Length: 170
Image (cartoon, rainbow, N blue to C red; front, side, top):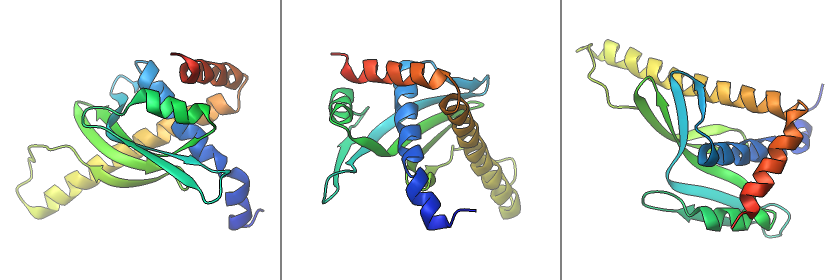
């Protein structure tokens, strides 16, 4: 069994590949995991890192309504990797916004949807928030599972080719 630090260094690229794939999918496909789940790039932020440069350079691309795709793809053409991205999910008509980081595939800034809570008491509201949080985590699990299935299959070469075409298109 690999030591955690060795495994992290060996497989660190998977998070950036996943976020780059996710960025591509959200920008180019009407992407539904199921009838209940649709993803999109939320307003505001994509961080792209040039891993091979010392010191490590990071480009943060932000926007009011959407990120500047041309600026993102230009950085990706130069060999950058997506290190952080803000996503919007629609799950059963509930909209979630959150940031996911490539290093550990960790969430931050999770904005749960506003709901009309049936429960007036604090226990009911807490249980509802836990349920909504779990929906977001399960959706990311399904997305990552789909990515890994593609990544380990013969379809990966076609996916890489499509991503390259997207990055280089004018």
